[in-house]
Length: 323
Image 1 (cartoon, one colour):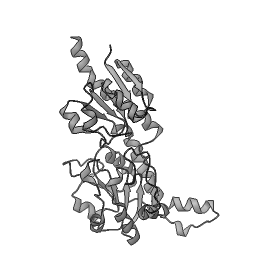
Image 2: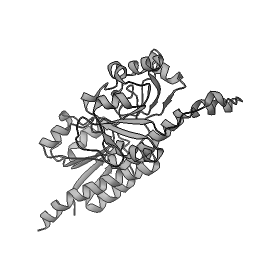
Image 3: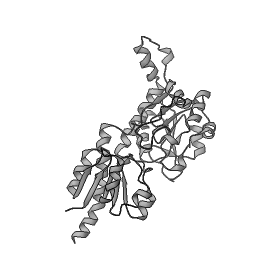
Image 4: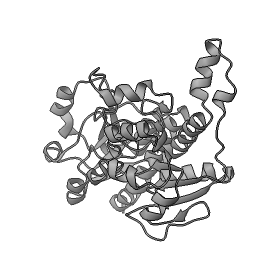
């Protein structure tokens, strides 16, 4: 059975290629082709596998009459015109279930590293310094951790934190009645009042740009730690730096930065970026290059989840054609 051709624009785990081939698709590896070469032949394909290499906007999608599905290895869909896909009945798959555990563990690791001064202490010991009192840390127990957004990633983080004796609260402007055994649903006002740690799990929508800004920081009642493993544009970096300088923000764990490229593969290194330079030099800031969801295990799971979703979607069509 030949279901058509699928183009792999970004590299993903081979399990997706294997399972799509088994279903009846012919898969083409174009991960090393340049965009010009890809666009020339993109209209040949019924399926696209992509991470974040480039945008699939309406202009591109409207020139692809054979396209039936797009498989995005990851969670965010900001580089895909999902409204156009919905109108044209192009199925769009993502796989947040594939890296939620990775993101949750990474966020927890960054938080513990910051709370216990591990970044500074490690560097000092390597340089012959043995400072115990100066590196006395803080326990998580009895702290209140506020989650902004309560989707797949936030819930996985809450599960990891459940054994630390913390109070978990969450505000999600898109949901209602989402309290569970881990987390209590609260208003934004309550989150701002109670939180010792605030972790961002907002989605990729443009309306969530700079949800953490000077006004937000001012409204938080207590000095707090900020964690961002979602999207760089969720945080106004200049305002974050001001909060760090004033002491209102005690520390920050940042896996993402607003200076990243759209593909997440690089970021600005301009020396005149004072905010970025401040973050890089701060001992109370933990930075990583958008790798929270980037473990060896999630590499497999991201593709395997996509394969499972595509199999469930295609089976009714296959059965229909056979009857």
